[in-house]
Amino acid sequence: MADYNDKVVVCWGENTIGAMSMTVSQATAEVFLTALRALPEEERQAVLTRIVEDEQWREDLKDLAVFSQRRNESARPFREFLEEHGS
Image 1 (cartoon, helix red, strand yellow):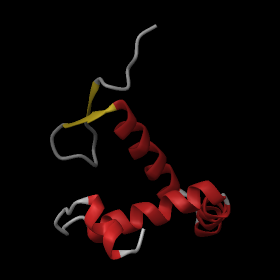
Image 2: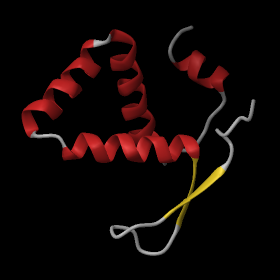
Image 3: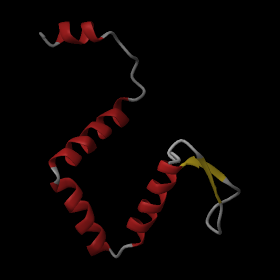
Image 4: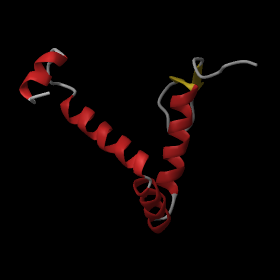
């Protein structure tokens, strides 16, 4: 069975300038987000509410938010972090 998750998909359309290269996972995410944005506000809120009600997804979203906020910070050794936080 073929594994398409690491293949590149080329997409183009009336809302795209030129062609975009992305993985199958990225293309799937783009289709999902496009559909989510197209929902009426009440339905979109219902989907988002269901996502944040799921404990694991909520924790994943929190982690992603922290990663996004701190992406420009310089890296440091993990042992240094542990020393600062008493672990």
